[in-house]
Image (cartoon, rainbow, N blue to C red; front, side, top):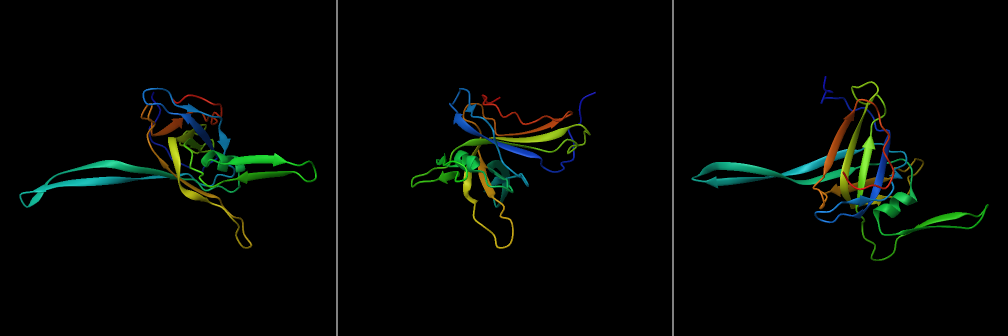
Amino acid sequence: MAMSRVTKLYAVEDCKIFPLLSDPAGGTAMYGEGIDVPGIKEMEISGDVEVKELRGDNGLLDSDSAISNVTVSYPHAKLSLDVLKALIVSTVTDSGTTPAQKTKWSMKQGAKPLPYKIEGKTPTGGSDAITGDVHFTLFKCVMSSFPGLGFAEEDYRTIENEARAVPLASTGEWVDVEINETATAIDTTATPAP
C-alpha cells in the first residue's frame, strides 16, 4: 500500500544551510557541508502569485497566473558566526589562548549575500507516521533582508533570517516537501544537487 500524501506538521527539530558552490546551467549544482542553524524556532515558506487578466469587448476574456516569488523565514534562538559567514561574504577568525580566546565575525564594505540551500525537518512523529518526519528543502536561496542581530532588554534576542528562493539554474529544482515513513536526519555532507 502506498504511503499517504497527507500529513500533519508538528514542530521543527532541525535546520541546516548548505553553501551553494556552483550552479551551472545544464550542469550539476554543488553544495558545501551543512551548517546547523542553532535553536531553530520556525521555518515559514510563503510565496506570491502574479495574476494577469486579458480584457476586451468590455469584459474579462481570460486570466493567467504565475508564481513570482517564494520566500523562507527561519528565526533561531542562538547566534552562529558560521551561519552568518555562509549568508554573506565575510570572515570568521579565532584567536588567543585560554582564558583569552576570541572568535570574531567580520563583514567589510562591498559584502554581498551568498546563495545557499536550506533544509528543515519535523521531529520524529511530527507527521502522521508515528515513526516518520517531514522535510522542507529550498535549493537556492539568497538573503532578502539583513539578519536581525543585536540585543533585547531583559530578554533573549532571536536571530531573524529571511531569504528569497529561486530555481536552480542547473536543474530547475525549487522547493521539495518530503514525507518519510521513517524519520531521517538531514545529511550534512557536501553533495551535488538531486
